[in-house]
Amino acid sequence: MEQFHILLLLAVVFLIVEVFSTAFVGGSIALGFLMAAIANYFDVNTSWQIGWFITGCVIGFFSIRWIATNYFYPEDLETNSFVGREGVIDGDLIKVNGQAWKYKSNEIIEQGTKVKVVALDGTSLVVEAII
Image 1: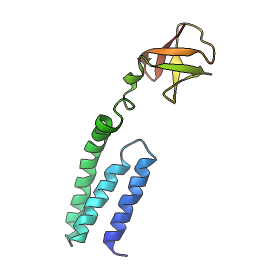
Image 2: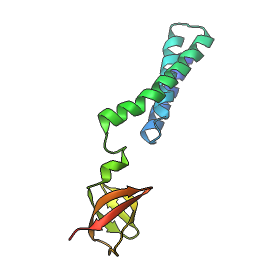
Image 3: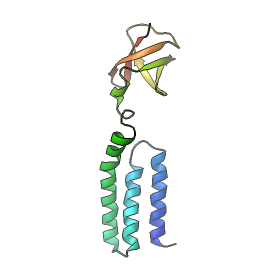
Image 4: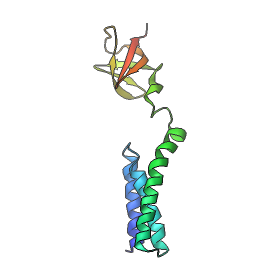
């Protein structure tokens, strides 16, 4: 197996890591390995391959999150998008769009009650019961 194939294999591995993570780092590293593999295919010097790897990682790091937030799921990455949505109380958590969040309320709300998100307070959603 040539070095070109190893670099491509590493790119695929990091793309798989990206699929199972939410940090957008695996895709950046995969792009770096892909660019290094292309440079290796054309018999570029090793120091240039490292440079292309770093360039790919930097480009990926600054562009993948931007692309994901603007084109694929813009509302899911912004917590303010939960304000105005409805959810259901499930124990100590509220489920909104299939995601479980801590919640705060000025009233006592029983489990199973439908609520509306009115604000965001740190990592908790502020809710009101729907009457």
